Length: 144
Image (cartoon, rainbow, N blue to C red):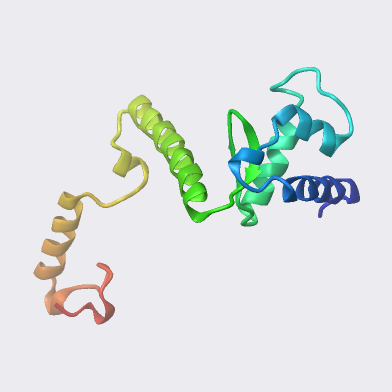
């Protein structure tokens, strides 16, 4: 359950971002932190974690909050949002690739995706089973 203080911080962040539509109106993390929390920070990374957590919470709720080195803003166009999402996706894939490299497994294996060889094996097993086998390959009714 959210506390009243948490809801007040979310509300302040939401209000502050309402006037920040479009990258050209971005607000830096420092000024945004001060406006939301009503105080300055001492350590740029450690002290501003609560602000980044609030931003992520709103993003998970569907708010179109973009950010880069200039600060935070609400996407003014679909293309602006696509650009932000593409950059975020690139970061996510880079992290997953790093994890795969460290564990010495491919990205599809890390994500639990079927490889083409896995799919062919499943088809062969299905074809070898009586009556076409189970309908586990994503086709309704399991028919060929």
